[in-house]
Amino acid sequence: MPINLSQLEDLIKANGLKYFKDEEHKLLILPFRRRMGNAIQILIRIDSEGQFLQLRSNDLPSLSHSPNLLVLRDLAALNYQNRWIKFGFDPSDGEVVAYGDMWVMDGHVTVQQIGRMVQNFVGCLDGAISQIRNQLSVDRFGADMSDRFSGSADGSLN
Image (cartoon, rainbow, N blue to C red):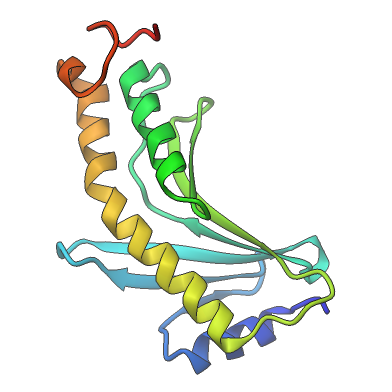
């Protein structure tokens, strides 16, 4: 059964989570404090007439338009390590994003499901954010990180 913004809001409230509502874009914004002190935000968006939910990072830094191949390899490694949450790079603007999808279709989203999804998403993002920031510094400053990978020093694939 499709979900609407009011139902999603009730599920988030039932988990005791703080949020902001954006009715125009059919999404909730959830702020979290990281273990390392920095804040992160995730968006939960309703799409496809309520049959699809997406959790998405809101404020990860951007890469250059031509990132170092080692940076992209690190993002691919994060995808390999995390089964549900995926990290992507938009070459048109350099945005790095993490996202997790849930098809609702004719099912019902429970309080426990949404709570676990948010908990897993935030935990994964919290664990990966330092690695992403390190990747961004490599991308911006061209640091030699070739010792972290097998292959050539220029980051080309063998």
